[in-house]
Length: 257
Image 1 (tube, one colour):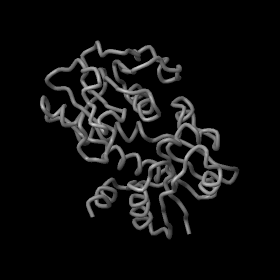
Image 2: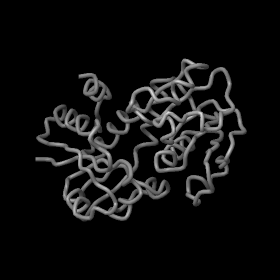
Image 3: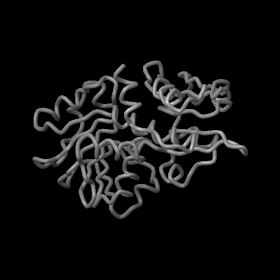
Image 4: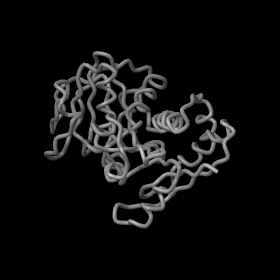
């Protein structure tokens, strides 16, 4: 029996267990997946999670779990993991959020980021993973918008990254990687400098339409939430768990049912 799950807080709403088990069914693997409410101070729950065969990681555990595994170079540069798998000699961690995001914007919004400019609100693990992926896929530049001074991270040291308090460069893609849209305070984000073709993504997927997305729809029909990002990163990490290939359709069907 393959034992997996998702750890973080809150996780009761998480779709990850459903996605995991859809993959197990497709692969003919006997396995289970459950949500585990875990916080950095909950050492007993952390220990139970590390006995699983593999697991997904969400807020607020992505940075914290870095010290519990051997991170890949990508995860190390981001400073966070969103997936851990068991190996013979211990635990290995990687981060598929950014690559999942890139796959999502290509397939859902037909975004080609090569030589384009992105504006990313936020500097947390999700934002850093997205910045890393945008740069790796050839973005011409990324402007990261923060509310306060932040510690330096490797992904922000790239010459193509500009960290600002106010958007100043016309963006082809705008990403809200903060929780502002969830609280109904989207107007608290300084407005991005945009063009008619600009696409917008809120990394949240619950609720499916955030306050920030509603504001962006007033000027564009190229607006998406983070559900596709969730599905693509789930596909990528489970492929990593089992060294296999999976069709995205099984994850799409899992959330439609």
